[in-house]
Image 1 (tube, rainbow, N blue to C red):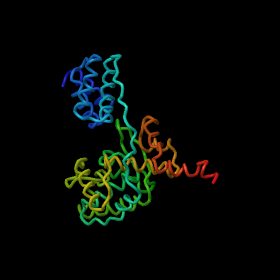
Image 2 (cartoon, rainbow, N blue to C red; image 1 turned 30 degrees about the horizontal axis):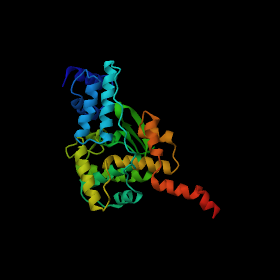
Image 3 (cartoon, rainbow, N blue to C red; image 1 turned 45 degrees about the vertical axis):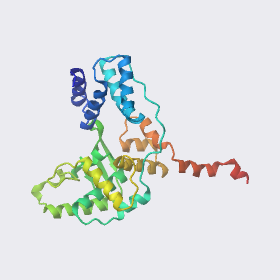
Image 4 (tube, rainbow, N blue to C red; image 1 turned 180 degrees about the vertical axis):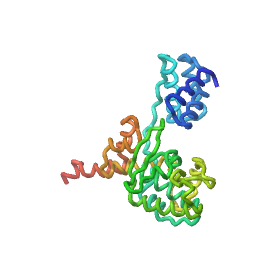
Length: 284
C-alpha cells in the first residue's frame, strides 16, 4: 500500500484507536482510489470503476466516506459526493422470529452458545463484535447492565432484560460444568462467548451458524443477518415508545442523525397511522 495511505491508517489505528474492521474498510477503499494524490478526474474514475464492477450505491457510499476522510486528512479541498441511494425498508427479524430463537431447545454446547448470543443481540441492540468481545466481568447480573466497547473503544453501559439474565445465568452454568471451572480459572476474565479453546469467535462462523439455524426454524433470513438483529431492536424500541435520544445512547451512535433513520416508520406503521388520521375514514 502507498506510503500516504499507510500513514493515514497508522494515525487512525494508533491515535484514534479505530477497530480492526475499520482499518480493513480503509484498506478496501484505498484499493479503489489507487493513488495518494487524486485529482477530480481520478476520483470520478474511481466511482465509475466501482459501479462497473457491480457495486450498489450503498456500498459505493461506504467507500466514499473512507475516501473523503482521507482527502480531509491530506488537506485536499476535493470531496466525492455520495450517490443517490434508494430508501429501503431495513432488514429485520419479527417478534415471532425472536420467539422461535428463545423457545428453541438446543442440546449441544455450541448451539446453547449461539442461542444466548442471538438473544443478547436482539435484547440489547449491540453490535456483533461488541458481543463477541464481551467478558463475564462486564456482565452485571444484579443491575442488569452490560459494559461494552464500541467503535473507537468507547465504553458504554446498556441495560438488558430479566429474560436475558435467565438465559445468561443458565448458559454460564453450562460453561462451568463443561469446563469444570475452579476458582483458579478466573472465570470473570473469560469471554462470554468463547471458542472451544477460550479464544474469540469468528464473525463468519457465527453468521454461518445463524443462517443454518434460521433454516432449521423456518425463519426468513434477512439481509445483513446479524446486523438485522440490531435493526430489530431499534425499531421495536421506538414502536414501544422509547426515546430516540435514549436509543442513540444505547446503540452507541455518535451522531443523532444515525439513530433517526430508525424513526422512519415502516410501511405497515404508516398504514396503521393512516387509518387513524384519514379524513375519509372519519367522515364515513
